[in-house]
Amino acid sequence: MADHNVDLFVIGAGSGGVRAARIASSYGARVMIAEEYRVGGTCVIRGCVPKKLLVYASRFSDEFEDAAGYGWSVGKREFDWATLIANKDREIARLEAAYTTTLERYNVEIAKSRAVLEDAHTVRLATGARIRAETILIATGARPHHGTPIAGENHVISSNEAFHLKELPKRILIQGGGYIAVEFAGIFNGLGCDVTLVYRGENILRGFDDDVREHLMHELGLRGIRILTRKIVKAVEKVDHGFDICLSDNEQIIVDLAMFATGRRPNTDKLGLEGVGVKISERNGIMVDAYSRTSVPNIYAVGDVTDRINLTPVAIREGHAFADTVFGGKPTAVDHTKVPTAVFSEPEVGVIGLTEKQAIEQLGKIDVYKTSFRPMKATLSGRDTRVFMKLVVDGNTDKILGCHIVGPDAAELIQVVGIAVTMGATKADFDATMAVHPTAAEELVTMREKAMSYGRAAAE
Ligand SMILES: Cc1cc2nc3c(=O)[nH]c(=O)nc-3n(C[C@H](O)[C@H](O)[C@H](O)COP(=O)(O)OP(=O)(O)OC[C@H]3O[C@@H](n4cnc5c(N)ncnc54)[C@H](O)[C@@H]3O)c2cc1C
Image 1: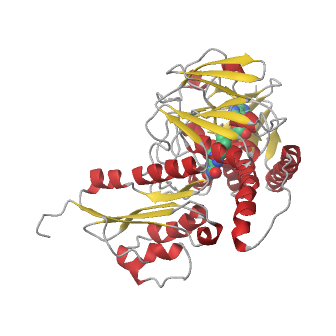
Image 2: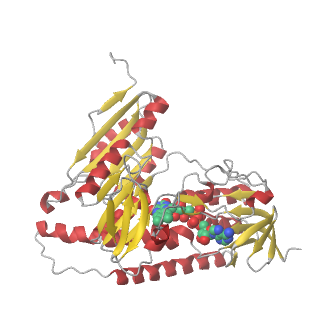
C-alpha cells in the first residue's frame, strides 16, 4: 500500500528535475521530488556555478600582470584559498535555499532522501515510505567516473572534491582532456599552481573543431600548463611529500594532488530500473524518445542521466518540455542541434554548430572563414596570446553551420551568435551587420577571405 499518492514523482532535484517539477505543478499536478544530496544538483552545488566562481578567482592574476603595461603598479599580491572556498560555499548555500524556496512556492513537496523504483508506479524512499505516482521522472544526473581502476586510485580526487580542498596544492596533475579537465587546469594555473595535464588522446577537447583544439592547446602551453598527450596515469603512490605518479611510459611525476576528470557516468545504478523494464544504453544512460519517454510508458527521464547533451540548459529545456508534454497538453520535443556551449578555460572557448570536419562529412560543399589575431588589450600588456575565430558556411545555402571562438569572453559572444545561427543567419547576414569598433567580435562580421572551400568543382 502506498503511503501517499501524487501525479508526478521526480527523482533528483537538479537542473532538469527542479524545472520539470515546478512547471508540472504550475499546470495543476500534485508533485513530489526526492533529493539524496543537496537541492540544486550538480550545476549549483558542484558544477557550473562553483566552477565559474573559481574561474573568476583564477583570472585576477592575469589582470594584475597585465595592469603594469597600462601604468599601474600593483603591490604585493596574496591569495587565500580558504577565503575563496568559504565565500563560494556561502553563495552555494544561498542558491540551494533559493531553489528550495522556489519549489515550496510552487507547492512541490520535497523529500530529502534517496528514492528508488519499486514498480512502474511506486517509488520507495530511504525511510521505507512508498509513494504511488501516475508519472515518474528520473532526473538523477551523472557522477565522475575514473575508468579502469589503477593502483592508488583512492588517493585521486574528482571535481567533486576539488571544490572542498583544505588547501591549494602547489603541484597538481590532472588527468583528462574534456572541458572539466581543461577548466580546472586553468583554475589551478591561474591561482599559481604548477599544473600537468595528462591525456590519453592526441589532443584535448575531443569533439571540438580541430583548429579550436590546436589553438587552445598552444595557448595553455604559453601559460605554463604542461600538457602530456598519449599517456595515462598507471599508478599513484603516496610518498613523503605528496604523490608519486607513474605514467604509462614510466615517467614519474611528484605532485601534491592528483585529480581525474576522465568522464561522467549516468546515475542509473541501483535505481530499480531493470526490475520495471526501463532500458539503458551501453554507456549506462536511460534510453528515451524525442519526448524523453523511456521504454516504460509512464516513466520519463531528462538531463545527464539520459546521456544526450550533458549541459545544464539542455537538462532544463528537457525538463520543461517534459512538463509541457505530459501536464500542459503541449507535446514538445527538444531540438538538440545547434546547442551553443562554452569551455571556461583560459582563454575561453565558445562554439555552436558543426565543426569543419562534421560539415564536410554531412554536406560536402562548404566554405570556411577563419582569423587569428592579437587582442588589442595584449598590445600594451605584452601578453603573448591570440584570439581565434572560425565560421563554417554551407556552400549551397550560405547559412552559418558553425561558429568557433577561442579568446576573451568567447562564452558571452557565442550566446549572442547563437541567436543568429538558430534563426538561420547566412554569411551574407553576418557581412551586412555593421561592425562594433574596436572590438574582437567585429572580426566575426568582417571576415571576407575564404580560408577553404570544399566540394566545389575546380572551375567554380
Ligand atoms: C565540474 C562541472 C562543471 C560543469 N560546468 C558546466 C557548465 O559550465 N555549463 C553547463 O551547461 N553544464 C556544466 N556542467 C554540467 C551540468 O552540471 C549538468 O549537465 C547538469 O547539472 C545536469 O542536470 P541534471 O538535472 O541532469 O542532473 P544533476 O544536476 O546532476 O541533478 C541530479 C540530482 O539527482 C540526485 N540524485 C541522484 N540519484 C538520486 C536518487 N536515487 N534519489 C534522489 N536523488 C538522487 C543527485 O544528488 C543530484 O542532485 C558541469 C558539470 C560539472 C561536474
